[in-house]
Image (cartoon, rainbow, N blue to C red; front, side, top):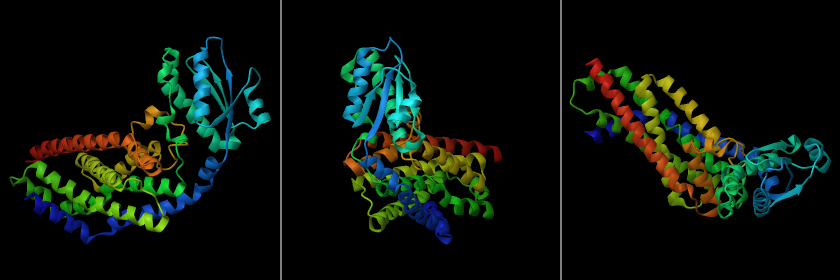
Length: 357
């Protein structure tokens, strides 16, 4: 029975393939626009030195903290100048720095140069990463654990704008997979299919899987084909092809499960698409889909909440390094999200079905 449901749902989507075609074509258009728009910014970062300054803000700052800070900056190829006193803003302007940080024991004050936004964002990210990942260890006098280089791709081998956006936008559009399920939802409403299923013995799990598998089967391979087109059209380097495909398919499954949960809650096709698009936009905003996560100043703890961030970072690191510690977290996040949303969606629809019986 479930094979019949999957086959029927795929037929419904194929009768009105415009949503699927748009979902596969739009990434190519966005990749072309964004990779061109951010090309100069990413190249300027690769080719220029990042020069910043620091100042000790109070006497309570331990020497281990400043030593670790300057060592981390040196390892990540940031040029730091120390200033004993003075007005930070005047120092920035006079010495043409991208920024200056006033170091305190458990906090910091950062001054940025608005004329060098691309560099100041990198410096901002570096300082934030240091205090989140290294400073706590230093304050605890555990200097052996002070290391941020391996945890932040800003300072790892560079990835150009074509590779970055050629990968990231595929992920972003894969997370909008539920758009392709609109044909199924509209047909169910138009033909009263839901009412017909109410008098049958088909379980809610089979009805749900019929939608989940059919939408994921239509969108997942399509996104893989679009990914292959980025190689021929833009020369995108995907790193490990098998892992990249697995991450794209996992993202598609997770996004479909999320979309179906939203649909089962609101039972409105338009509202579902708008809500899912909004959710994915926020996940993409904090996950680096629009502003590269390498230049982003958002707190790391916030970005880690977004499954899109894990997938984006895993794929970007696979492209520029050939490996990534985020592959496992990305797959785990997508798997847990798929299972959790599926269980909730089936439970919600079961309750509604009993209520309407």
